[in-house]
Amino acid sequence: MALPRTSESETTSEFAVPDGLAVPRTDSETTSEFAVPDGLEVPEPPAAEREGSAFSPPSTYSAPQAPAAFTPPLGTPAVSLTKEIPWQDRMRTMLRMPVAERPAPETVQRTEDEGGPAVPRVLDLTLRIGELLLAGGEGAEDVETAMFAVCRAYGLDRCEPNVTFTLLSVSYQPSLVDDPVSASRTVRRRGTDYTRLAAVFQLVDDLSDPDTHVSLEEAYRRLAEIRRNRHPYPGWALTAAAGLLAGAASLLVGGGDLIVFVAAAVGAMLGDRLAWLCAGRGLPEFYQFTVAATPPAALGVALTLAHVDVKASAVITGGLFALLPGRALVAGVQDGLTGFYITASARLLEVMYLFVGIVTGVLTVLYFGVKLGAPLNPDAALAVGNRPVTQIFASMLLSLTFAVLLQQERSTVLLVTVNGGIAWVVYGALHYVAGISPVASTAVAAGLVGLFGQLMARYRFASALPYTTAAIGPLLPGSATYFGLLAIAQNHIDKGLVSLAKAVSLAMAIAIGVNLGSEISRLFLRVPGAGSAAGRRGAKRTRGF
Image 1 (cartoon, helix red, strand yellow):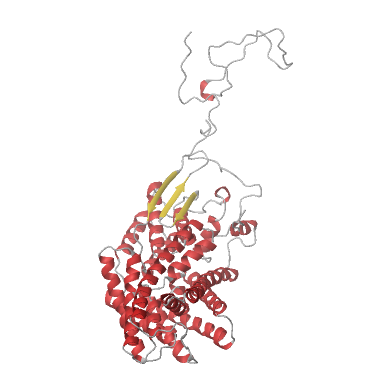
Image 2 (cartoon, rainbow, N blue to C red):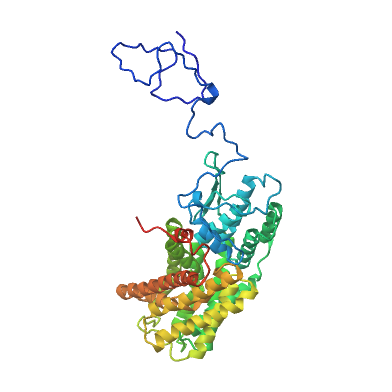
């Protein structure tokens, strides 16, 4: 007997009796008092009302008039989304909440028609904005916050952005019974341009503002203008800034002679031009840093071989300041402290490769210098001396030139210059006057830098990087790195490793201090829903279990 064929979409249980198979009833079968008596026919339910899969929409479901998918046991959280609170804190609070507990947008301002803009186009705009932020060195948490803000601005509140070093993805599911829509984008090229970063933050701020009407086409147009904008400083200005940065660093670590300043500046400018040449040929960054570290070390060794009465160690140390990857280190540690461990591991691995490139270039030159008989002494630490005025001037000049190298807006250069000077004053007061260890002094100074940068970022609704990255320049461990490499070149492995360990400790103190200052700043800021359970749930993070 041929069994009737069922449709492929019909879902049946594996315990159901197949159609056409009659199960005989035995006399010994026990029946319930609620069983249907023999001879009474029970009408079969129509085919349309058969129970389907748990993932198929109910027959009474209508997408345009869909009810709320889920209401938490304690009610819908009351999260304040007022304009007075920076959008970074508003969106971060929403992003840390479970999807089912996020309150729906009060009003969607950026709809192009009744149905709103197409979901794939909104996701594409979100990914493009996230790409510019991640390529500019922004932390993973801030990138996810900006991506969520863009999606929510166009009514896509049930979205989940995800950032993993070079991969951006976002998923949107309208409801529990609808299919999700996902999109991803890979960051191929990264570059430092804080002016472009500030423009992207301004765009996200306008999209998050309920009083500002920005259509999807207008957002695409502004994003295209941001991409086409030229850098604020020409190439020769960047090369000159690299030279002045190295010269200021040489003054900061104890090289008070004009010859030391000029030699450090010339070496850094030569290294910068060689790095640009290698970049134009397509060489990886590892070799670019290796080549860029060679000229300052070569000039320091040459002055020593020529028996010029200058501090060659200050020349080499000044050249190293322009190459140390402080920006990437701070971003990597910040990602790790905020729970983005994959991105943090990748960024710290990148920092390690760049540092090894610097070590390779400097160590090669120092090795040949020692073989040629250059009187380089790793025990002769740089005598900084009591020169507070010179050091404060050098720290401010270093921060200013660092800001130029980072392509910052001219309106932020003065603030970050003052911030760098204050950071060095705090470090000098703690280390040279109070006698506190350099690691602790560096951490406190970096914490103040992060606190100031975060407060300024919230005041201007902008990124904190332009106010913090250049200001930590005077705190970078250039001299500890140089003396560690010199000791290794002279076969004093133990002393070299101790000095390099000190350099790593100082670098970690800078990164942790900047992040700690940023977190402390939130204690003085208004947090959405701070007086409700939503605020407490939104601030929770993993505890490791």
